[in-house]
Image (cartoon, rainbow, N blue to C red; front, side, top):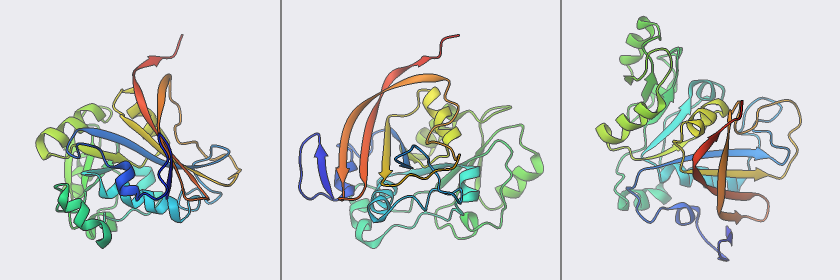
Length: 250
C-alpha cells in the first residue's frame, strides 16, 4: 500500500496509516466501499462484490483499530454478518493499543427484527450489542436479550447519540467504526456524530439503481481531505468531517 497524501510514503500498512495518535480517544469512522459511479452495492445488492484485496486489507485494519463495529440491521442481514475475528497478524498490534478482545458488533434496529439464531449472535466471542428503541415489540427484545446485550435508547426511534454515549461511558467502547448502511450513515452525519469518512473507490461502474454510501441526507456536510492511499488498483480516501453540519434550506 502506498500513501499519496498528505505526504508520500512508498510502503505503509493500513493499520499504521489509519491509526490515531491517541488510540483511546473518542472517534467515529464511517467505512464504505463504492464504485466510480457512486454505487455502494453491486448488481446482487451487496457491497462485498465491489472491493478487491486492498479494500479487504483496509476493512480488516479499521476493524482491528476499533473498540466496536456499528452496523444497521438491514446491512447485517443482507451481508450475512458474523462476529469480529481478529487476524493473527494484527492481534499483537491490537493488544498493544489496549484492545484484548474482538470488537463487539453493535446492531442498530428500530424493530428488533433480528433472528436470535443468526451467527452474529451464536458465534460471537464478544457478545453482540443491539441498539433499539421502546417502540420495538417487547417479545422481540426479550428474545434478543437471551443472546445479546440489548440497549433501549429512544422511544419511537433509536437515539444514536444516546446509544454512542452509553457505549463509550458505560462500556469504554470509545473508537467506533460504522459499516453502514447508507441510511444509518445519513442519520449519524445529520446528528453531527461522525469524525471521519473512509471510502474505497473501486475501479468499476457498478450500474443499476443501488444506493450510494449515504442516502436521504437532509443537509450539507463539509469534508476535509485527510489521507489518500492506493494499492495500484483501488483508491482509499479519508476525510475529516467539519462541524457543524448545515441544515438544508426550506
